[in-house]
Length: 301
Image (cartoon, rainbow, N blue to C red; front, side, top):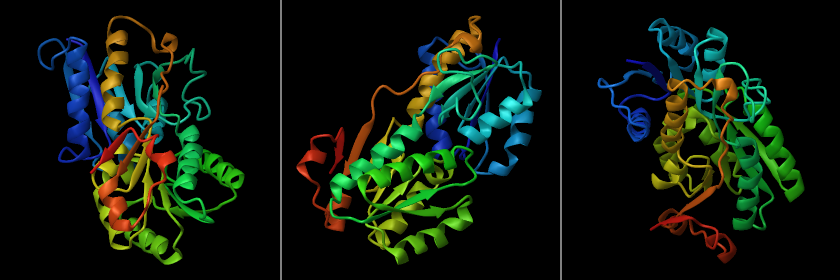
């Protein structure tokens, strides 16, 4: 049977469990059942991002036919570790600029998969916040410098802020033990609202982040739909991480049937999703403009 190694950056009790279920469902939709006609080698990084090269090496040691990895640091580690084993990107920010693929239409090499358009999303998120807070002069932006795409995304966000006439305050956290201090700094400096960039660290710890922001009454726009569902004020995303994992199974199927990653175009999101948590908005005393409500894809009461 073919062997597929898949990596989840969280742990099997929380985000990893949800994303694994989505990937298994996606594989089943393509006709694969673990132990029947495919072997799924499941790996969890448990937020230990510094161990990614070691984890990738362990995955490759089992001689998989395909490996599925999310986010730029893990994909770069996989690309560095092998130039022959097909790599499916479960989600990646601007893979061309990061050198993961030669182009979206013709990836070349052994990497293909799904791009999240995070660099485009950064500008759209700020535009949405400007609509919600039309008189605001300062927004915060929480990002992780450990993500290789972070600086590129920050540049896009800063350019959008200048066009909108607002100041963007940069906040950084690369590890869980840095989050408390960073969120306290956000509360102290009081931007009108906070954008939380797309990064595994923030998704894995989203419940803690949402609770901390609620205590300090800081509205935030999250880059993961799961955060708004868990009580965050607003999310503007290209879909949930689970959806990306589910979709990555299509690439796995085509590769197992003989397609080469070099010839499989990288897929990009065709739509963005706005989710607003009306309960949180009410608790924060925020009146959402009608123009924004008309664009909401899902409202959580």
